[in-house]
Image: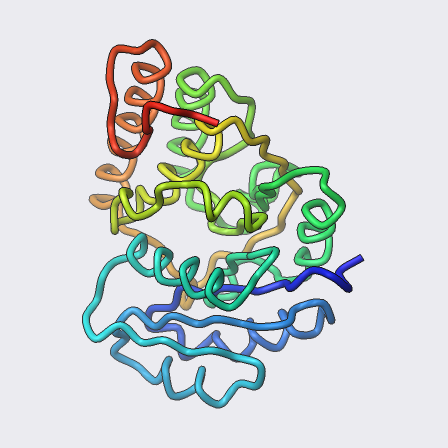
Length: 251
């Protein structure tokens, strides 16, 4: 299935020293990953040192913190430069299980979907895994609003577990996106803007002290950013607004 496809896992890392090795071990245990790319966004801990000790791994360290979106931009650029056919983003904080990598990659390798998300909502895993209630409520509200604005039917837009075909990463104007957390939302909106389809698989998730999470203030900023992305998308489809994020010529 993956004999003629190079599967690359990218990990946007920030202060991930406590969970990086555990995540990496489970990623490689799936037996299909050819290369792991770890981008350390100027961590204050031993993330880079630990990453440099891991086999089949390419490590890149930002000299200064660029933000979550800026980290992903580097991840995807390095993955394409490495010849990746399938790119899977896994957070190195072990919040999402790498055991879904074969399933997500197979859906892309078989030509079924060019983009696959690991959803915390499908299967009712979010609250069971410890997602704070206020985050769950905000997730459901934003997802409803975005489905209406983007004309899609996803269970959530806010998962950090994603797989992409090379074609998508070459097509999307990711450099135009934010360097902050709203990058995730902009990217999925761009996938839909260019006419690609998105699949979802149910993903158990775990919330614990070492898992990354943004605070309430930044969550509010993120929420308004997501709504802004949805409105720009809708106005763009109506021909009322053009932005660099959503260029004039869609796929």
